[in-house]
Image (cartoon, rainbow, N blue to C red):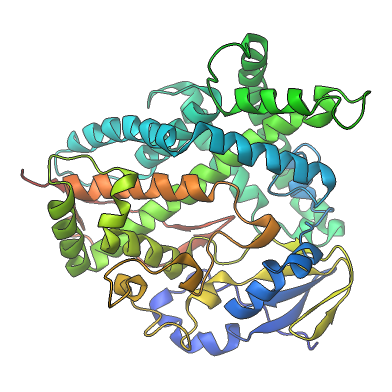
Length: 467
Protein backbone atom coordinates (compact mmCIF):
# COMPACT_ATOMS: atom_id res chain seq x y z
CA UNK A 1 0.00 0.00 0.00
CA UNK A 2 1.30 3.44 -0.87
CA UNK A 3 1.89 5.83 1.99
CA UNK A 4 -0.44 8.83 1.89
CA UNK A 5 -0.96 11.98 3.90
CA UNK A 6 -3.31 11.39 6.82
CA UNK A 7 -6.21 13.83 7.07
CA UNK A 8 -7.90 14.14 10.45
CA UNK A 9 -11.13 15.56 9.05
CA UNK A 10 -11.55 18.90 10.77
CA UNK A 11 -8.11 20.45 10.69
CA UNK A 12 -7.04 22.97 13.29
CA UNK A 13 -8.05 26.48 12.27
CA UNK A 14 -10.21 25.32 9.34
CA UNK A 15 -13.93 26.00 9.22
CA UNK A 16 -15.73 22.77 8.39
CA UNK A 17 -17.98 24.72 6.02
CA UNK A 18 -14.90 25.11 3.85
CA UNK A 19 -13.91 21.43 3.91
CA UNK A 20 -15.96 20.31 0.90
CA UNK A 21 -13.03 20.69 -1.44
CA UNK A 22 -10.77 18.70 0.87
CA UNK A 23 -13.03 15.63 0.96
CA UNK A 24 -11.43 14.03 -2.08
CA UNK A 25 -8.03 13.82 -0.38
CA UNK A 26 -9.33 12.62 2.99
CA UNK A 27 -12.13 10.35 1.78
CA UNK A 28 -10.21 7.59 0.02
CA UNK A 29 -11.63 4.28 1.31
CA UNK A 30 -8.37 2.89 2.70
CA UNK A 31 -4.88 4.32 2.82
CA UNK A 32 -1.72 3.93 4.85
CA UNK A 33 0.55 6.40 6.56
CA UNK A 34 3.77 6.24 8.52
CA UNK A 35 3.46 8.17 11.78
CA UNK A 36 7.02 8.30 13.09
CA UNK A 37 7.70 4.66 14.03
CA UNK A 38 4.14 3.40 13.51
CA UNK A 39 2.50 1.92 10.43
CA UNK A 40 -1.12 3.08 10.37
CA UNK A 41 -3.99 2.07 8.08
CA UNK A 42 -6.87 4.54 7.91
CA UNK A 43 -10.39 3.47 6.91
CA UNK A 44 -12.70 6.13 5.42
CA UNK A 45 -15.48 3.89 4.11
CA UNK A 46 -18.50 2.76 6.13
CA UNK A 47 -18.70 -0.51 4.20
CA UNK A 48 -15.04 -1.35 4.77
CA UNK A 49 -15.31 -0.26 8.40
CA UNK A 50 -18.16 -2.76 8.93
CA UNK A 51 -16.23 -5.51 7.14
CA UNK A 52 -13.18 -4.80 9.29
CA UNK A 53 -14.67 -4.19 12.75
CA UNK A 54 -18.07 -5.87 12.84
CA UNK A 55 -17.58 -9.26 11.20
CA UNK A 56 -16.82 -12.09 13.61
CA UNK A 57 -13.28 -12.98 12.56
CA UNK A 58 -12.03 -9.71 11.11
CA UNK A 59 -13.37 -7.73 14.08
CA UNK A 60 -11.24 -9.79 16.45
CA UNK A 61 -8.25 -9.51 14.09
CA UNK A 62 -8.05 -5.76 14.79
CA UNK A 63 -9.51 -5.72 18.31
CA UNK A 64 -6.16 -5.01 19.93
CA UNK A 65 -4.89 -1.68 21.17
CA UNK A 66 -1.38 -0.24 20.93
CA UNK A 67 0.47 -1.59 23.97
CA UNK A 68 3.32 0.90 23.92
CA UNK A 69 1.60 4.30 24.01
CA UNK A 70 3.32 6.05 26.89
CA UNK A 71 0.42 8.43 27.66
CA UNK A 72 -2.08 5.57 27.81
CA UNK A 73 0.25 3.63 30.10
CA UNK A 74 0.51 6.59 32.49
CA UNK A 75 -3.17 7.54 32.41
CA UNK A 76 -4.47 4.00 33.05
CA UNK A 77 -1.90 2.72 35.57
CA UNK A 78 -0.51 0.23 33.08
CA UNK A 79 -3.50 -0.33 30.77
CA UNK A 80 -5.86 -1.35 33.56
CA UNK A 81 -8.93 0.27 31.99
CA UNK A 82 -11.26 -1.06 29.28
CA UNK A 83 -11.03 1.58 26.56
CA UNK A 84 -7.24 1.53 26.08
CA UNK A 85 -6.42 -2.00 27.26
CA UNK A 86 -5.29 -4.64 24.77
CA UNK A 87 -7.62 -7.44 23.66
CA UNK A 88 -7.12 -10.28 26.14
CA UNK A 89 -9.22 -12.84 28.00
CA UNK A 90 -9.08 -10.57 31.07
CA UNK A 91 -10.37 -7.62 29.06
CA UNK A 92 -13.28 -9.68 27.70
CA UNK A 93 -14.16 -10.75 31.24
CA UNK A 94 -14.01 -7.18 32.54
CA UNK A 95 -16.08 -5.85 29.64
CA UNK A 96 -18.69 -8.58 30.13
CA UNK A 97 -18.96 -7.78 33.86
CA UNK A 98 -19.19 -4.02 33.21
CA UNK A 99 -21.83 -4.47 30.50
CA UNK A 100 -23.96 -6.71 32.73
CA UNK A 101 -23.60 -4.30 35.65
CA UNK A 102 -24.90 -1.41 33.55
CA UNK A 103 -27.83 -3.49 32.30
CA UNK A 104 -28.78 -4.64 35.80
CA UNK A 105 -29.15 -1.05 36.96
CA UNK A 106 -31.39 -0.47 33.94
CA UNK A 107 -32.61 2.31 31.69
CA UNK A 108 -35.34 3.41 34.07
CA UNK A 109 -32.86 4.09 36.88
CA UNK A 110 -30.54 5.87 34.44
CA UNK A 111 -33.39 8.11 33.31
CA UNK A 112 -34.42 8.89 36.90
CA UNK A 113 -30.86 9.92 37.80
CA UNK A 114 -30.53 12.10 34.69
CA UNK A 115 -33.94 13.72 35.26
CA UNK A 116 -32.98 14.74 38.80
CA UNK A 117 -29.86 16.44 37.50
CA UNK A 118 -31.78 18.08 34.65
CA UNK A 119 -34.15 19.80 37.07
CA UNK A 120 -31.20 21.49 38.77
CA UNK A 121 -29.61 22.39 35.42
CA UNK A 122 -32.79 24.08 34.19
CA UNK A 123 -33.02 26.06 37.42
CA UNK A 124 -29.45 27.26 36.99
CA UNK A 125 -30.14 28.21 33.38
CA UNK A 126 -33.26 30.17 34.38
CA UNK A 127 -31.14 32.18 36.80
CA UNK A 128 -29.00 33.37 33.89
CA UNK A 129 -31.94 35.67 33.11
CA UNK A 130 -31.32 35.96 29.35
CA UNK A 131 -27.69 36.91 29.93
CA UNK A 132 -24.90 35.54 27.74
CA UNK A 133 -22.83 32.79 29.38
CA UNK A 134 -20.58 29.84 28.61
CA UNK A 135 -22.61 26.64 29.22
CA UNK A 136 -19.60 24.31 29.50
CA UNK A 137 -19.27 23.96 33.29
CA UNK A 138 -23.04 23.59 33.81
CA UNK A 139 -23.21 20.81 31.24
CA UNK A 140 -20.18 19.03 32.70
CA UNK A 141 -21.85 19.13 36.11
CA UNK A 142 -24.96 17.34 34.77
CA UNK A 143 -22.95 14.61 33.07
CA UNK A 144 -20.44 14.23 35.92
CA UNK A 145 -23.16 13.95 38.57
CA UNK A 146 -25.21 11.54 36.46
CA UNK A 147 -22.27 9.20 36.04
CA UNK A 148 -21.04 9.55 39.65
CA UNK A 149 -24.51 8.81 41.01
CA UNK A 150 -24.81 5.78 38.75
CA UNK A 151 -21.36 4.40 39.51
CA UNK A 152 -20.48 5.48 43.08
CA UNK A 153 -23.77 6.94 44.48
CA UNK A 154 -22.27 10.40 44.86
CA UNK A 155 -23.29 13.83 43.53
CA UNK A 156 -21.68 17.24 43.86
CA UNK A 157 -22.66 20.88 44.12
CA UNK A 158 -21.38 23.33 41.55
CA UNK A 159 -19.00 25.05 43.98
CA UNK A 160 -17.71 21.80 45.48
CA UNK A 161 -13.87 21.82 45.42
CA UNK A 162 -13.82 18.17 44.29
CA UNK A 163 -15.96 19.01 41.26
CA UNK A 164 -13.82 22.02 40.40
CA UNK A 165 -10.70 19.85 40.63
CA UNK A 166 -12.34 17.29 38.36
CA UNK A 167 -12.92 19.99 35.72
CA UNK A 168 -9.25 20.91 35.84
CA UNK A 169 -8.02 17.30 35.85
CA UNK A 170 -10.23 16.24 32.95
CA UNK A 171 -9.22 19.13 30.72
CA UNK A 172 -5.54 18.64 31.52
CA UNK A 173 -5.72 14.88 31.02
CA UNK A 174 -7.20 15.07 27.52
CA UNK A 175 -4.84 17.89 26.56
CA UNK A 176 -1.75 15.91 27.54
CA UNK A 177 -2.90 12.62 25.94
CA UNK A 178 -4.20 13.98 22.64
CA UNK A 179 -1.68 14.06 19.82
CA UNK A 180 1.32 13.36 22.03
CA UNK A 181 4.18 12.48 19.64
CA UNK A 182 5.84 10.25 22.25
CA UNK A 183 3.07 7.68 21.68
CA UNK A 184 4.23 7.17 18.12
CA UNK A 185 7.96 7.58 18.78
CA UNK A 186 9.19 6.85 22.31
CA UNK A 187 12.51 8.53 21.51
CA UNK A 188 10.64 11.86 21.39
CA UNK A 189 9.77 11.60 25.11
CA UNK A 190 12.49 14.06 26.23
CA UNK A 191 10.91 16.73 24.02
CA UNK A 192 7.57 16.40 25.85
CA UNK A 193 9.00 15.71 29.31
CA UNK A 194 6.98 18.47 30.98
CA UNK A 195 3.75 17.19 29.41
CA UNK A 196 4.41 13.63 30.56
CA UNK A 197 5.33 14.84 34.05
CA UNK A 198 2.09 16.79 34.26
CA UNK A 199 0.16 13.76 33.03
CA UNK A 200 1.70 11.59 35.76
CA UNK A 201 0.76 14.18 38.38
CA UNK A 202 -2.85 14.41 37.21
CA UNK A 203 -3.17 10.63 36.85
CA UNK A 204 -2.04 10.10 40.43
CA UNK A 205 -4.47 12.72 41.74
CA UNK A 206 -7.37 11.14 39.83
CA UNK A 207 -6.37 7.68 41.01
CA UNK A 208 -6.25 8.66 44.70
CA UNK A 209 -9.53 10.55 44.37
CA UNK A 210 -11.36 7.50 42.98
CA UNK A 211 -9.56 5.00 45.22
CA UNK A 212 -10.95 6.77 48.26
CA UNK A 213 -14.49 6.47 46.88
CA UNK A 214 -14.03 2.84 45.90
CA UNK A 215 -12.58 1.83 49.27
CA UNK A 216 -15.66 3.14 51.05
CA UNK A 217 -18.03 1.33 48.66
CA UNK A 218 -16.19 -2.00 49.02
CA UNK A 219 -16.01 -1.76 52.82
CA UNK A 220 -19.70 -0.89 53.11
CA UNK A 221 -20.93 -3.41 50.51
CA UNK A 222 -23.61 -5.80 51.78
CA UNK A 223 -24.85 -8.27 49.20
CA UNK A 224 -27.96 -8.97 51.28
CA UNK A 225 -29.13 -5.42 50.65
CA UNK A 226 -30.28 -3.61 47.52
CA UNK A 227 -27.60 -2.83 44.96
CA UNK A 228 -26.67 0.84 45.41
CA UNK A 229 -24.67 1.49 42.26
CA UNK A 230 -22.66 -0.02 39.42
CA UNK A 231 -19.64 -0.75 41.63
CA UNK A 232 -21.81 -2.82 43.98
CA UNK A 233 -22.92 -4.89 41.00
CA UNK A 234 -19.33 -5.37 39.81
CA UNK A 235 -18.31 -6.54 43.30
CA UNK A 236 -21.21 -9.00 43.26
CA UNK A 237 -20.29 -10.28 39.80
CA UNK A 238 -16.63 -10.79 40.64
CA UNK A 239 -17.60 -12.74 43.77
CA UNK A 240 -19.74 -15.01 41.61
CA UNK A 241 -16.79 -15.66 39.30
CA UNK A 242 -14.33 -16.16 42.18
CA UNK A 243 -13.16 -19.80 42.29
CA UNK A 244 -15.41 -20.66 39.34
CA UNK A 245 -12.55 -21.26 36.89
CA UNK A 246 -9.66 -21.79 39.31
CA UNK A 247 -9.88 -22.77 42.99
CA UNK A 248 -6.92 -20.53 43.74
CA UNK A 249 -8.44 -17.48 42.02
CA UNK A 250 -9.43 -14.59 44.27
CA UNK A 251 -11.88 -11.74 43.63
CA UNK A 252 -8.87 -9.47 43.15
CA UNK A 253 -7.64 -11.81 40.38
CA UNK A 254 -11.01 -11.64 38.64
CA UNK A 255 -11.36 -7.85 38.72
CA UNK A 256 -8.75 -5.97 40.75
CA UNK A 257 -9.50 -2.74 42.56
CA UNK A 258 -7.10 -0.93 40.25
CA UNK A 259 -9.04 -2.22 37.23
CA UNK A 260 -12.34 -1.09 38.78
CA UNK A 261 -10.87 2.35 39.45
CA UNK A 262 -9.74 2.69 35.84
CA UNK A 263 -13.13 1.50 34.54
CA UNK A 264 -14.74 4.21 36.65
CA UNK A 265 -12.34 6.76 35.16
CA UNK A 266 -13.26 5.59 31.66
CA UNK A 267 -16.98 6.02 32.25
CA UNK A 268 -16.87 9.25 34.25
CA UNK A 269 -14.11 11.14 32.42
CA UNK A 270 -14.46 9.96 28.83
CA UNK A 271 -18.24 9.60 29.14
CA UNK A 272 -18.78 13.15 30.37
CA UNK A 273 -16.28 14.55 27.83
CA UNK A 274 -18.05 13.11 24.78
CA UNK A 275 -21.64 13.73 25.89
CA UNK A 276 -20.89 17.34 26.82
CA UNK A 277 -19.20 17.86 23.44
CA UNK A 278 -22.33 16.51 21.71
CA UNK A 279 -24.67 18.81 23.65
CA UNK A 280 -22.52 21.88 22.96
CA UNK A 281 -22.30 21.11 19.24
CA UNK A 282 -26.09 20.66 19.19
CA UNK A 283 -26.57 24.09 20.75
CA UNK A 284 -24.25 25.61 18.15
CA UNK A 285 -26.05 23.90 15.29
CA UNK A 286 -29.48 25.19 16.33
CA UNK A 287 -27.99 28.68 16.67
CA UNK A 288 -26.76 28.35 13.11
CA UNK A 289 -30.08 26.89 11.96
CA UNK A 290 -33.03 28.67 13.65
CA UNK A 291 -35.54 26.99 11.30
CA UNK A 292 -34.50 23.61 12.71
CA UNK A 293 -34.91 24.95 16.24
CA UNK A 294 -38.47 26.00 15.36
CA UNK A 295 -39.29 22.49 14.10
CA UNK A 296 -37.89 20.93 17.27
CA UNK A 297 -39.96 23.28 19.45
CA UNK A 298 -43.08 22.42 17.48
CA UNK A 299 -42.52 18.69 17.99
CA UNK A 300 -41.86 19.17 21.70
CA UNK A 301 -45.06 21.21 22.12
CA UNK A 302 -47.12 18.43 20.54
CA UNK A 303 -45.60 15.60 22.56
CA UNK A 304 -44.80 16.88 26.07
CA UNK A 305 -45.98 20.50 26.25
CA UNK A 306 -43.91 23.39 27.55
CA UNK A 307 -44.50 22.49 31.19
CA UNK A 308 -43.68 18.80 30.69
CA UNK A 309 -40.48 16.88 31.28
CA UNK A 310 -38.88 15.09 28.34
CA UNK A 311 -38.13 11.46 29.15
CA UNK A 312 -36.27 8.85 27.13
CA UNK A 313 -39.46 6.88 26.50
CA UNK A 314 -40.72 9.93 24.53
CA UNK A 315 -38.00 9.28 21.95
CA UNK A 316 -40.11 7.34 19.44
CA UNK A 317 -42.69 10.14 19.44
CA UNK A 318 -40.05 12.78 18.70
CA UNK A 319 -38.17 11.56 15.61
CA UNK A 320 -37.12 15.04 14.50
CA UNK A 321 -35.35 15.86 17.78
CA UNK A 322 -33.75 12.41 17.76
CA UNK A 323 -32.66 12.85 14.14
CA UNK A 324 -31.13 16.24 14.95
CA UNK A 325 -29.02 14.60 17.67
CA UNK A 326 -27.83 11.91 15.25
CA UNK A 327 -27.09 14.59 12.67
CA UNK A 328 -24.91 16.35 15.25
CA UNK A 329 -23.02 13.10 15.77
CA UNK A 330 -22.49 12.92 12.00
CA UNK A 331 -21.55 16.55 11.45
CA UNK A 332 -19.34 18.07 12.69
CA UNK A 333 -18.60 14.68 14.37
CA UNK A 334 -17.79 14.15 18.03
CA UNK A 335 -15.02 11.62 17.38
CA UNK A 336 -13.55 12.45 13.96
CA UNK A 337 -10.84 9.82 14.31
CA UNK A 338 -11.27 6.60 16.27
CA UNK A 339 -9.09 5.37 19.08
CA UNK A 340 -6.38 3.28 17.35
CA UNK A 341 -6.95 -0.45 16.93
CA UNK A 342 -4.06 -2.90 16.59
CA UNK A 343 -3.95 -6.00 14.42
CA UNK A 344 -3.36 -8.88 16.83
CA UNK A 345 -2.47 -11.20 13.93
CA UNK A 346 -1.86 -11.02 10.21
CA UNK A 347 -5.10 -10.10 8.44
CA UNK A 348 -6.45 -8.20 5.44
CA UNK A 349 -8.51 -5.07 4.89
CA UNK A 350 -10.27 -4.48 1.57
CA UNK A 351 -7.90 -6.92 -0.11
CA UNK A 352 -4.71 -5.41 1.35
CA UNK A 353 -2.47 -7.56 3.52
CA UNK A 354 -2.18 -6.09 7.01
CA UNK A 355 0.73 -7.40 9.11
CA UNK A 356 0.36 -8.08 12.80
CA UNK A 357 0.82 -4.99 15.04
CA UNK A 358 -0.25 -2.55 12.31
CA UNK A 359 -2.42 0.21 13.76
CA UNK A 360 -5.88 0.70 12.26
CA UNK A 361 -7.88 3.90 12.65
CA UNK A 362 -11.34 4.84 11.39
CA UNK A 363 -11.84 8.31 9.93
CA UNK A 364 -15.39 8.78 11.21
CA UNK A 365 -15.50 12.35 9.94
CA UNK A 366 -14.79 11.25 6.37
CA UNK A 367 -17.39 8.47 6.62
CA UNK A 368 -20.03 10.89 7.89
CA UNK A 369 -19.27 13.42 5.15
CA UNK A 370 -19.09 11.00 2.22
CA UNK A 371 -20.94 12.82 -0.64
CA UNK A 372 -21.73 9.47 -2.29
CA UNK A 373 -23.73 8.51 0.81
CA UNK A 374 -24.99 11.79 2.28
CA UNK A 375 -26.64 14.43 0.15
CA UNK A 376 -25.13 17.86 0.88
CA UNK A 377 -22.94 16.38 3.65
CA UNK A 378 -21.73 19.76 4.91
CA UNK A 379 -25.26 20.97 5.63
CA UNK A 380 -27.10 20.23 8.85
CA UNK A 381 -30.15 18.22 7.74
CA UNK A 382 -31.84 16.11 10.45
CA UNK A 383 -34.46 14.90 7.98
CA UNK A 384 -31.86 12.70 6.30
CA UNK A 385 -32.34 10.27 9.21
CA UNK A 386 -36.16 10.18 9.01
CA UNK A 387 -37.98 7.63 6.87
CA UNK A 388 -40.05 9.63 4.38
CA UNK A 389 -42.86 7.06 4.38
CA UNK A 390 -43.26 6.20 8.06
CA UNK A 391 -41.98 9.50 9.51
CA UNK A 392 -39.91 7.47 11.98
CA UNK A 393 -36.21 7.57 12.68
CA UNK A 394 -34.40 5.15 10.40
CA UNK A 395 -32.65 2.22 12.14
CA UNK A 396 -29.08 2.74 13.31
CA UNK A 397 -27.97 -0.07 10.97
CA UNK A 398 -29.11 2.01 7.97
CA UNK A 399 -27.56 5.35 8.99
CA UNK A 400 -24.31 4.58 7.12
CA UNK A 401 -22.07 5.81 9.90
CA UNK A 402 -21.19 4.45 13.34
CA UNK A 403 -20.31 7.12 15.92
CA UNK A 404 -20.19 4.54 18.73
CA UNK A 405 -17.99 2.11 16.82
CA UNK A 406 -18.67 -1.49 15.90
CA UNK A 407 -17.52 -4.92 16.96
CA UNK A 408 -15.73 -6.05 20.12
CA UNK A 409 -14.33 -2.56 20.82
CA UNK A 410 -17.57 -0.60 20.40
CA UNK A 411 -18.42 2.03 23.01
CA UNK A 412 -19.28 0.46 26.38
CA UNK A 413 -21.46 3.42 27.39
CA UNK A 414 -23.33 3.79 24.07
CA UNK A 415 -26.83 3.34 25.49
CA UNK A 416 -26.19 5.56 28.49
CA UNK A 417 -24.83 8.29 26.20
CA UNK A 418 -27.95 8.08 24.02
CA UNK A 419 -30.26 8.37 27.01
CA UNK A 420 -28.34 11.22 28.62
CA UNK A 421 -27.97 13.29 25.45
CA UNK A 422 -31.64 12.89 24.47
CA UNK A 423 -33.01 13.78 27.91
CA UNK A 424 -30.64 16.72 28.49
CA UNK A 425 -31.03 18.22 25.00
CA UNK A 426 -34.79 17.58 24.93
CA UNK A 427 -35.41 19.40 28.20
CA UNK A 428 -33.14 22.33 27.37
CA UNK A 429 -34.94 22.79 24.06
CA UNK A 430 -38.36 22.40 25.67
CA UNK A 431 -37.69 25.14 28.20
CA UNK A 432 -35.57 27.58 26.19
CA UNK A 433 -34.90 29.23 22.89
CA UNK A 434 -31.18 29.04 22.10
CA UNK A 435 -29.84 32.33 20.72
CA UNK A 436 -26.59 33.94 19.69
CA UNK A 437 -25.87 36.71 22.21
CA UNK A 438 -26.76 40.17 20.95
CA UNK A 439 -23.88 41.76 19.08
CA UNK A 440 -21.97 38.47 18.83
CA UNK A 441 -21.06 36.41 15.79
CA UNK A 442 -22.19 32.82 15.37
CA UNK A 443 -19.98 30.39 17.30
CA UNK A 444 -17.55 28.98 14.75
CA UNK A 445 -17.78 25.47 13.42
CA UNK A 446 -14.12 25.07 14.24
CA UNK A 447 -13.27 22.24 16.55
CA UNK A 448 -10.53 21.61 19.07
CA UNK A 449 -9.22 18.10 18.48
CA UNK A 450 -8.48 15.93 21.48
CA UNK A 451 -9.83 12.52 22.40
CA UNK A 452 -13.10 14.05 21.22
CA UNK A 453 -13.91 16.96 18.92
CA UNK A 454 -14.97 19.89 21.11
CA UNK A 455 -16.19 23.30 20.01
CA UNK A 456 -14.16 26.25 21.14
CA UNK A 457 -15.58 27.94 24.22
CA UNK A 458 -18.63 29.98 23.25
CA UNK A 459 -21.35 32.05 24.87
CA UNK A 460 -25.07 31.56 24.46
CA UNK A 461 -28.28 33.33 25.47
CA UNK A 462 -31.16 31.15 26.63
CA UNK A 463 -34.63 32.74 26.56
CA UNK A 464 -37.33 30.99 28.54
CA UNK A 465 -40.22 29.76 26.41
CA UNK A 466 -43.57 30.94 27.71
CA UNK A 467 -46.10 28.31 28.84
